[in-house]
Every structure is written in structure tokens, then in C-alpha cells.
Image (cartoon, rainbow, N blue to C red):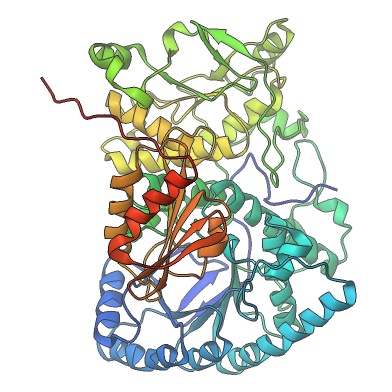
Length: 638
């Protein structure tokens, strides 16, 4: 059985959902995609909390989240909300809850929405290894129901919304032991809480599936939506097989079509809104690229009703990024179709080249172009135009890891329209593998067009990805600044890389030679497909943070940015710290005010280190594990 995660991977259509009201703001349904963020100050600092919320509202933030780590913090939300309403600010407030159901109950008295994390709402993570029998697992679910039900009942009675927000870094030991550290575990963790809510007749909740790894994040959200569609099909009485992933020429009805056949979205519908975010994305270009890959990919598939971009920067800087990501999806409607005669006939049949729920790089053949190998198991290569190569010719030897590898005009790449049967057939008839790309000038959405190309080409043929099909940029993209071009390129190229499509990349939308190369390499790094520099996982700040994340991240980067391929996580507190350490080589985690714990993988090995010594001790830890190299000496400019 193939699960459906979107209406059609080749045609944009926003996923139909029920509406959830968060105060005066509607999420899902016919509402626009909402933009939200989180303040960073101590929740007990009432005036600072009010001011940061006002600052966010003034730049277009539609929903504001505030952490409530204790009952005392949760109680102070009363004064924060009263201060905001007294100043004429109606932006809905969300209480962010981890570990303490008592804090959630207090917060729900004062705010419009409560965020709970299924991984730690009723559990504390100990990384315990245990085999659960079915009876033992059922007993655990009964315990969770007892802890979670009071909040559900209160929220239902008082009109509070809720986010059931799974984090990859904080899955419970129970989930980890049964489902593993996987997208499936993330989805099941959320569905366990959703079933409790539904059993109590409560439906005003929103899901999220956050991870610092865009591939994991994309797969988890897709799997969640597919599972929700599956449950919806069961409730409507349609065979689950009818919900297979869309393929041209099939007659399987879409979820939206089935819903329309059965009337409007029912009160018991499983079509809940989705909150999108890449957690611990980091700062600067890297944080924006990683966010654009994960969030942009899902928005492109019609998934997502509210967005939060998590940057290790002041929260107001997150809003323009989120607004830019959702802007292209403000208008609904199909943006890509097959040739008219094919689509009308129900025509051409093709299978997706990728598994939406599990990463697999497309298995192409290895080819050599001007002495550089690509395809097969070779690393993904970076192309550039001859004009840019010439502009950099005088300093190619100094570019290091940002060096261009192949000139596109000299590569012999075949550029095609993926809808042209004859052109595709000629390439597939070739006895030798051919490097193929999309022709410039095609009026087709980039992601959908490359998906179609990958679906119709025999897998042995490598593909060169492009961020735009118009070298001069279409009128809509003219005048964009570098960050806007960065977000577009990251969304398009990064999304395809996470689907396993692409053996080389070419950035055409940025004209500056050096910046276009840096962008290409940074997209490859963020997508996890070519690691060429130190990789950082850095959470955004909040009221739980035990040190200044921005300055600390800058210090750690200054000390370690030369460690190619080493992954370092920088966490302000323990909420996601231990879980995210599992995906990092080393971790720097706030343990207490002014104190830092250092991790190797998911294991804490150094405790309560004074913050003033912690960066030096991190360097020592990296040395102990054989991953330290001395930075190259700085060569003075002549």
C-alpha cells in the first residue's frame, strides 16, 4: 500500500484541513498560512515579555509563544496577557510546556493555546533500554491518559487550542524502544496524544513534527499527513487502497474529492492543521537555508497552515524569513500540468523516483566530465557558468572548499522539456548514461518539473539541478536581494536533494560568482548531501535558555569552524539537548545558570562547567576524541 501525503506531487494544491481558532486568529481551513515566533526573555520579566511580544506583532507576527517551564512562570502569563491587552495588542499567546502538566493547567487559564510535547509531557528521558510487552505498553498509555486528560478537558470547556508538538530530539524512552529514533516514532508519539483528545471529544489541536535535520523533518510531516489521511479514509468508509500516492492515469480519488463527496469537513475529521518548523536551524545563512529546505519543501506539497522559523537570533529576524517562505503560496491553484492532450486523456503513467517517507539517493550511473566524476556514489558536484568561472579564474586556488568543479557550457549536459516524449525516449535509448537537466526558459515550477524529469528518465541518467530556469530571472524575481534568492534556491534545490534527486547543482539565480558558489555548497551541507565544513545545530533562545545563545554560538564557531565534517550541537537547556546530541558528535548544553554540560553523542560526559571555561573545555573534549585539527595559519594579504 502506498500512503498519500499530498493531492498530487506534480500539481500544487494546499491540503484541506479543519479550522482551529487560536483566540481571534484562525489556523487551517480557508485561512492564510500564519506566521509565528517565540520571545526569548525570562517569562518572569513581565515588561520584557510584553515588549518583545509587541515588537514581534509590529513586524507581522500573528501568534506569539512564551515558555512556561514552571507553575510560577505559567501564573505570570496572566500579567503578560493583561499587559498586552491593556496596550491594545490582541495577538494570541501560546504557552510552551515541557515536563510539567501542572504548568500546562495553570497556563491554560490565561492563554489562547498550549503547546505540549508528547515526548516529555508525562515522561522524563533517561535513554533506558527496555522491551515492552503489549500489556506494559497499554499500561503506559493509561498512565499518559491520566496525566493528559485534565488539560484536554479544561481546554475543551474553556475554548483553548493546543499544539501536539513532537520533537525529534525529545522522543520518550517508550517510543524510542518500540519505534526507534525515526519519523514513525515521531508520528506515533503525536497520534497517541491525539487519540486521547479525540476520545474526549476535543478537536481544537494542531500537529507539528520538528527536527533539526531537514530530511527527517520532511519525512515525519509527510508520514503524519499520510497517516491522518488514512484515518480519514477509514472513518469515511473508503478502502485504504484508494488513497495510494497519486500517479498520472490512476483513478484513485483525492482526499479532498472524497471529503466533498461526503459533504464538508466533519466535526470528527482527522484533517487537522499543521505547524511547520525546522528546530535548532542555527543562525545566518545556514539557519535560513536549512529552514527554507524543510519548510519550503512541505509548503510546496501543500502541507502547512502555520510556520515558525527557528533562528539563533533575535526573534524579530525570524518573521521576514517566514513571510518570504509563505508568500508564494498565498494564492491557491494548480501551477504545473502535463501537456494538455496527455492530461485530458488521463495519459502518461509514471512512478515517483523517490520514496516520500524514507531517503534514498537516486541510483544513477557514474560518468566523468572534464576529469571530474559524478553520479553513482560520487559526491554531488557544483557547476558554474563560464562567465562566473572566468571572473574567478585569478583566485581559483584560494577558494578552498567553495571552488567550482565543472563549467556547464563545457559539460555536454542535455537540456530537455520533461513533457516531451520523443526527447526523453532518445535519452533513454542511449547505451551510455547521459547527464540531463531542464532547459532554460521553460515556464514550469522547478520542483515539479525536476520530479517529472526524474520520474520519466531511466534511473541510470544523472541529473543536474538548477534553482531557476531563467538565467536573467523572471520579472517577479528581479530586484530581489541575496537573502530572497537564497530562500528560493534553498527551497527548490534543497527539496529535490532531500528527495534523493540530483547529482550536481547549478545556481543561476545569484549573479555574483562567489556568492552563488557559497550558496550551492551551503545548500548541499544543509541538506546533508555533501559535508564540507563544521555542522552546527543551534537552538533559538527562549525563557528556558541558561546562557546567551547568540554570543555563545559565535564563540564556539570562532573556535571550531575549521573542523570539517564535525557536528556540534549548541543547546540552551535540556528540553531537546540530550536527543539532539544523538545526531551530533559533540554537544554544549545549558545545565544550570552559568553552568554547561558537554556531551559526546547523546551521552553527557562533563558536568557543571563554568560558562567562562566551557568553550575551552569543548575544544579539549574534541581533542580527546581525535577530531581536533589545528586551524590553518592565516596568510597575510600582499
